[in-house]
Image 1 (cartoon, rainbow, N blue to C red):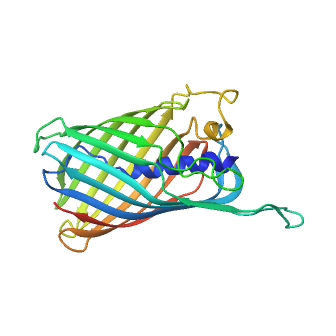
Image 2 (spheres, rainbow, N blue to C red; image 1 turned 135 degrees about the vertical axis):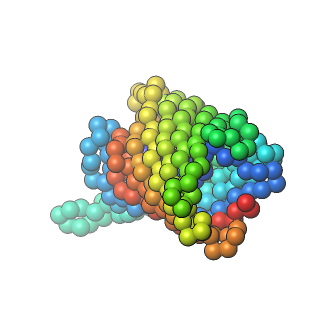
Image 3 (cartoon, helix red, strand yellow; image 1 turned 90 degrees about the vertical axis):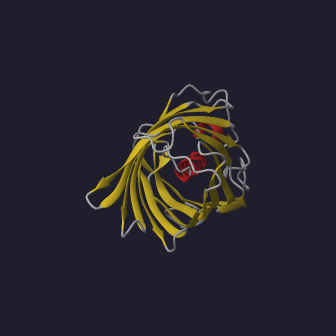
Length: 289
């Protein structure tokens, strides 16, 4: 049962991380496109009281396509599609006899798709740019998959995230840098608790802006206003009331003017109902800027 909500959390976290934030919409006719592989393997988790408990070794692997495209200089469309999501659980074995108690399992399906629209409130070139985004989470993934019906590639609920970003680009000595922050409300359906989200990001461009490194801190706080165990299934319950504070370290290197590779590592340093293990990502991108 524990694997259910851990998996759902990481699917949500991977989507939130893939959705490039910041108050800078794409220019009209320009875009950013990325194909990436994200994964995590974990054998322990944070409980609902913030303690760490062991669980059967499990893993999630997402192959995703992310894109931003400027409709106008102020409006940017956003899409994030987990093209293939693999969710697996290893065999549960007896600690005394090593016999298999519950056989392992895996599913491979599409994940939940995100589509959104970002609007630049301030004009391009503003000292402190501000943008607002609406992101819709479409429940295209699988619920209750596998022989034990405990594997998921989606949470089965339609959610709407309203987000405001603000930031500023500046010079740090001879380097280019930026700092941005955001706040967001996640309205969830199907008896899931609403969430308050916020975070901050610092980025630095080096090697003549070919290498961009960034540090991101993201926080999710649950309103804990969803259904209780008496009114919803265990799967929905275990996807509910997730809270965490996470840090992400990311590097993007431009091989050419427009094509580059990216790598990141992320993990929660405080949480409730989440896995206590890092996640990783590798990708290739095309930036039309």
